[in-house]
Length: 144
Length: 139
Image (tube, rainbow over all chains, first blue to last red; front, side):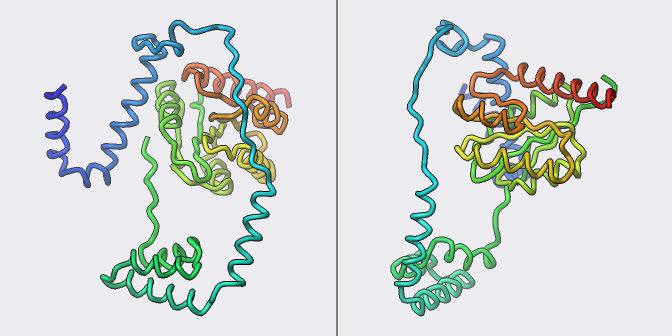
């Protein structure tokens, strides 16, 4: 196992390091291939998992109570957010968001700026909307 | 079969669990299907547009977030609205039996839950596409 791990580390090195391997999808593909191999081993019974592909109870019925979230939860939360927006000091919100943008554009401390935002009830959405144009958004390349 | 079956695989919404759909993608590829994978965090609109653009026979959607009662019907509705009602929609995820029954009534053709084998899904897609092609000939 140690030798296999070493071989992997060498291969990653040979391909230009971990960051390059992620960017080129090598690591993602290795993980996906391993998952597929694992699934095939289970289906061919080359890998036995008790209760899954061996010693399975044929007529076993498991009753799991299902938690259902009522739509009223969404309405209540929307109402709550609306009342927060009305009650908070919106000038302070605007000011802390500007400070956050300044910190994000330069080399300022964004964590401190985010804390200042949330202390005056700036929402997570507002914070992300402020940062998104500066940092952009990560989109994972679809790798299969 | 003369033509390759074309399948779009998609992950809608805020759900990052893509191990399963990647296994399905590999199984479908081994079965000789043409597989297109959208990647994570897709909206129903993005999925339906990709399905139409890529001219697929089948759309397979993986949902493990619990939002299946919203997302599956939204995708089906958009497919039908865009006159792509011949596209077969199936899916997989952690979906309670009563929800599966409700979704099947809404035109989500088939739903697989944990424990389904890759072979079952391949078999399903082959039969569903063959069945559809037969319908077309009759029409």
